[in-house]
Image (tube, rainbow, N blue to C red; front, side, top):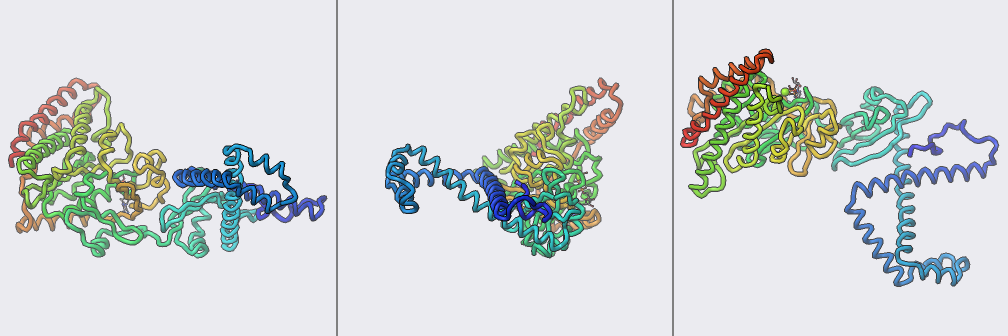
Length: 537
Ligand SMILES: Nc1ncnc2c1ncn2[C@@H]1O[C@H](COP(=O)(O)OP(=O)(O)OP(=O)(O)O)[C@@H](O)[C@H]1O
Ligand SMILES: [Mg+2]
């Protein structure tokens, strides 16, 4: 497709022996082949990208050909175009051909026409971009400019151009960003490598997303509605969502992309906007990430596997109790003020640590399996009960988050993914793997709508400050809990730390570990019995 057309050739490449006329004919032929080739490949791509349109076009073509055969219009046209050239014998022969042959010829002619038009269009666009590159001096050592290979509209504001770099490095494109913006008249959103280092994907946008948005800034711009939280700054607006509409959320992205920060600002947003909310934060990095929330009286931080399973069991019991209540009262869903029950958030950062399948001799294997099962139950049923799950993880695969859980969580915030496969699992397309390296830049996906956002950044100091304000509101009884928080019993805590020590200890102590795991499992099972207590509250 990037064959040497005349506009790419250096003047010295002329053929000395040829006559000028032969040279012109050869150039025209070569150019026609290149233009046709470009157009044809673009046409084939379009057919695959838009199969519905391709189907409609095929149907229209079939109908038109049938009609023409019936009316003999194409023959009349041929006679009109070349009355002497085509004899009656030849026309009669054409007339007697089958509809299928007519259809083949008609599709062939149409393909050639469309390919040539598309080819000229692409050729014109290529030349336009090459002139722009030439004007800003983005050329290689032999004066060649990057060549446009393909282009696509990502949405109504963003255009992605794929260039063959012609040996011009990514760093040179990046250094020329402001020149590129001036030349294209659009903001450069990202410059990334394409299918390999030879290609550059240049994403241009009408408006540019900021590389940083503060939590305070979005709060000032747009107030949160009840039970809502911020997703981030999109091109035109600040996006916020009501947790009741989701009702669960999955956050994913490569390490350092901004998952935990987004997770925390989501929780802060929900704490601020929700008058009746309980939160259970499972943070298996020893609770260090979530430590800033401990001041809020309606938040509990869970730091180990056994406690996490205990809480999940309690959640399931609570969910069942709420269903029983809804049935008794003939209601469809929990409304905190009416039903005197809080909305409950169960949030897991580093979900992979909690759910990952472990080998049989691992003391935590049984707990991980239980956690998967309980989360699966909650993800399926907890919507009406007002219990919501928020899971953050680096990778989303069936070994880490069971497929059934993934299927029940349609709201997704996806930060930069290192692999195409990761992006495909999260969003169903490669967009997350093509995001720029900007921290906090992510794609919000709900239903089939994707929105690129810059997530708000919240500092730890800000979280502590906002949580202590919530604490003060509880102290002044501006806020009250309808139901008591679920606490981890003291014996459970002791057993959990024993298990933690065992898990951290040497593998040679497998037997002891298994015994400890059993005892913790028993305690977690005891939650079933205790659950009735919670349910009746
Ligand atoms: N929205 C944001 N805006 C600006 N900077 C951010 C944003 N989110 C995160 N960062 C920066 O990136 C760093 C890493 O973020 P974070 O800890 O949230 O990443 P992560 O995806 O959770 O990584 P890991 O998988 O290693 O836990 C933060 O310390 C912060 O400096
Ligand atoms: Mg993190």
